[in-house]
Length: 73
Image 1: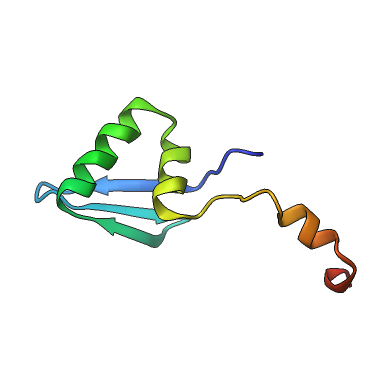
Image 2 (image 1 turned 30 degrees about the vertical axis):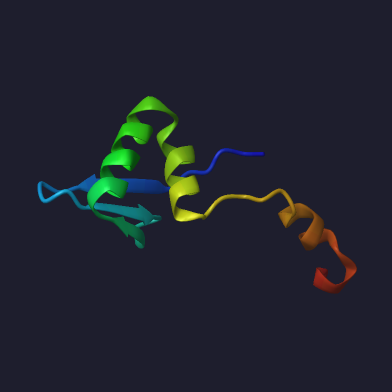
């Protein structure tokens, strides 16, 4: 599985975290969820953490679906 990329986040002083994927808004976190995210993103791989928090990550079946007969053109 390849590592995701293209994620970025900005944290505001009011405690809100905005996560973007390729400069498009992916999600906004507030309150305790934002603080948990900030703790997790500093402890691990930021790209993987942001992919998991947004739900935008590879599930392993993309190649299989792409190679299926009905999806070939």
